Amino acid sequence: MAKVKVQTRSADSLSLVGLQISSSGVICPAGYHRLSDAPEVAAAVWWISDMVSTMTIQLMKNGPSGDTRVRDALARKVDVVPWSLGTRQTLMGWITATMLLQGDAFVLPRTAAGYLADLIPMPGARAQLRPDGEPYEIVWKGLAFDPDEVLHFALRPDLKEPWHGAGLQVQLQQVVDSIMQTGATKLAYMSSEYKPPMIVAVNADSDLSDDDARQRFVDSYLKRSDPSAPLVIPADLLTVSQVRPLSLTDLAIKDGIELDKRDVAAIVGVPGYVVGVGEFSKGEHNAFIRTKFMYYVTVIQQELTKKLLLSPDEYFRLNARSLYAYDLQELANIALNLSMRGLMTGNEVRNWMGLSPKEGLDELTILENYIPLGAIADQSKLSGNDNDKGGNA
Image (cartoon, rainbow, N blue to C red; front, side, top):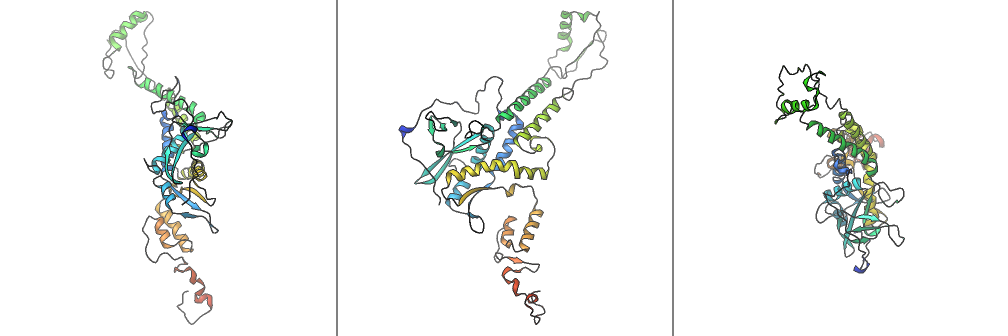
């Protein structure tokens, strides 16, 4: 099993810092909105984090003929139960969501006898400059940790402090403020007693030309204990010939919301249908997996490899093959073509299709009659033996 690089520290070496309040109900400055407050941002982040959390974490080893998967205790620990209080799904989901929303996500490895015992998420941890001239330290619960003691998943390095993740905050903050303002405008419009606002035209010389008279009229006829009840107005007082209410379309709220959703999709990198804009596109989905999504995944798998492995020939890989949009027929055709060319065994094909292996399907075969790959040269049509007319031709 690969060992984990670890440093022991005494209690005297721990530096104390001020307490940092961090919770789901954190108090924000006036006028500030967290990224997760916008439903569109939350939907995009949850979608990405859910996909990352379902990916198998594979321990790979370099070989002369290609990389092979290693199945040992360390591989199972990281892939199945990396965190004693959760699973890979909970830990990877938390890392991804925190990294996207805050720019940095920190995980503390705990070791026993030099071997990995636990990976503990560090909510509320932050990176800060060190007073002794060293680049930075990670502070959590009043303790300071060196960078090589903590898994630091940083999304998009900051230009001034490359060790710090800039994340999506700068790009998304203005869009989130716009979304929240649009939502408040829509809520105020829909919750108004007059849905929609009403404009009543009167003659200039009528009794309603006076402000006090208008207010008395409004209090008498337009205010209702039940906003859904109809308006009852005396016919001899005024006549309402037509009322054309303003709609959300007239207020351009619909267009504004759609533009904000497209901005969120473009900044986060998710397809538009994730945030409710456009329809599902197989090509767009697969392009997202190959490009933007793999960038997020690379940040995670490289940090795991850098901090948890000592062997230069091993690395962690998150398997994204199952995330592509394809149906069973496409998968079966690919597997069949590979098996006919001697590139996959029958059991490998069954594994792709989610079926259990069968005895006798571990040998590579080729051509339409599925002869063993090593028997290709024994065919009579290749050896020139015409006595066996049936042969293997």
